[in-house]
Image (cartoon, rainbow, N blue to C red; front, side, top):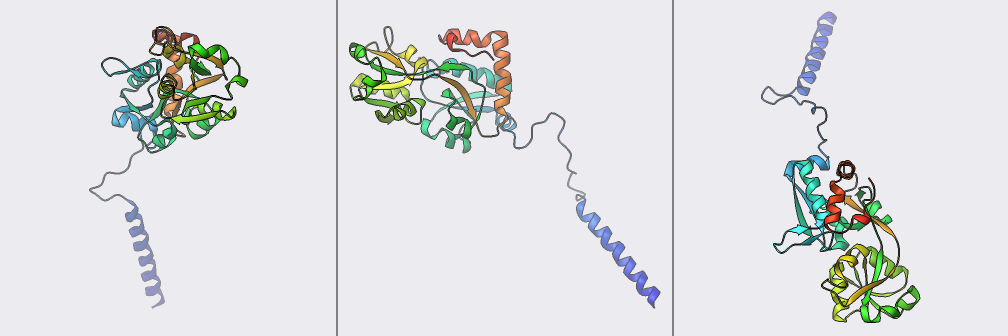
Length: 278
């Protein structure tokens, strides 16, 4: 009897172990899971995500000479052209979306856009919230005033009584706040220029590269000029935190700088002196 009971228990254990082993195996009509081929991007890779949907969605504002529209409505500029070339190197198309600059991180994290590529200053706030590329251009924030009063505003002490227009969430807004200046936030730097031209603001603070392209003789704002440089800074491109696209862009920047195509693009828009060696 004892032998029969022992044999019964042993048989039960064997059957139980076999059942457990079978439960881990795939059903006959389900393929077994296989490892990804070497070099294949991980499932959470931004590079794989962008290549999978076939587009690199670029968040921008209107910002000549970096991102602006030609007479046919196509986005051009140094940043726009470089973004198109980078997208092409990934085998996808670049798509441009105008964003509220103050909400750029929300747009990234919500996957409305894949990157912010719009003459973006690499501030501590930006680099802590995004995965950023290496710096590729030098820049500064400058004061814009009507040309006929420019001689009155040649140092920061002279700015205290002025009302400023600044782009919300921009380095220009940060400079105005740091200096304790009275300022009104607008949607884009181009809007800040319009405020000064219309006389609704006394002055604006914008990027020097934009100022060089958009104010003064031969531009749409011939009656405006820039006076004081308030700081020095660098531009970079921002991706979602942890994104592998930042490393891919750094490699692209190095190759483009080495083969001269980055400089050629910069010369097209007059920003070659601001380029940073990659």
